[in-house]
Image (cartoon, rainbow, N blue to C red):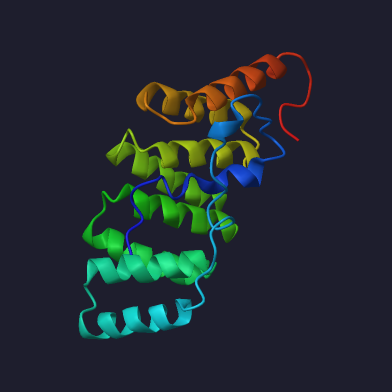
Length: 189
């Protein structure tokens, strides 16, 4: 199971759906948040068992570690996902997708500060990784109540990923949040 491609972790948007009021461009709405719009496979238990068997025979099988981590992620078994993602990152510390997924697991398990650290590591190794930059903004705003930091994370995304598919929506949201900062109005709900 491979997670690269369509920004699979671009998913925290629903978690802040109440915050972000995207207007216009209804055809280009971002996908749902990580783990919230994806159907859970009915055969996840069998797939997990298959990966466990592979890992019993070859504990350093990077793809199996990532695969089982992804299944644990999808089934919201965050601590098990983190455990396997850590092992995978010990073999390939530059995998921004794995590090970003692990950050989401940290956030969901109540450790947003650790999530932020992991996202910053992902960004330092892969500066154009849009999902980690986007998620960093979400966590800073939603969990840490650091609106300025979140806006800066999103501005970094816009600056470093010129072909970001939701560019116009994010740019509008950043402008909306900036305009509300000085007005005394609540920037996020």
